[in-house]
Length: 254
Image 1: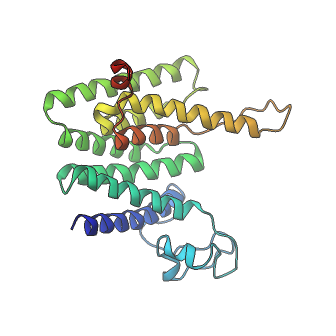
Image 2: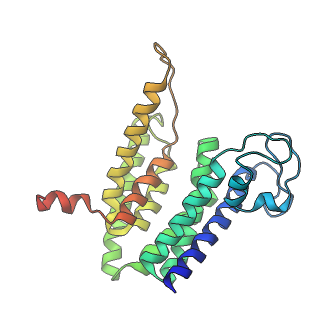
């Protein structure tokens, strides 16, 4: 029963991720999110229904569009597999509970935010507000007590305040202002693992930053802007799903 439910939740995640990809691509473009056929990015031909099947179509077509033979981006199947896996892990962690419903909503909104940030380096306020709200409901419904959630809320506010200060004192050069409410939502979602997630986010950002710098042409001094939302998401989700409390580990001396 658990295996069947996990597979079903995984498939649901891939389907939702496919729709989120459309939302992220059409948001604020004037195109309808709910109507209108998807088109090939290379030749603009309308995609057949089979081309919209998450993950399976990409591998069945060997990563190429049927209409023009253009190579398809790995982003779509990768995000579909990722959200499917996160959905399944959430089910295994939370079970069939109200907290799971809020967690799946929060994860879906988080994917939309990350995809939009990667494309435009900005986080849409409506999606951001919905993510914070769903994360708060997920954290509240999964917390063992109201007192425990109060501690999580305080930690989340401190994390958000620290990023706000970084934005203010750097004049917005080191970090965007919208990263603060995103971190607030992620901390509420991560619960007792929020601080570890915060540390992980900077570790992930540092590693990716080093890789980006190493790939720059020699002698280049041009600045490179890298969205921080994916690093925040990766750090907090890594802490949440591994349940590794970095500070408890350090204090134990092991």
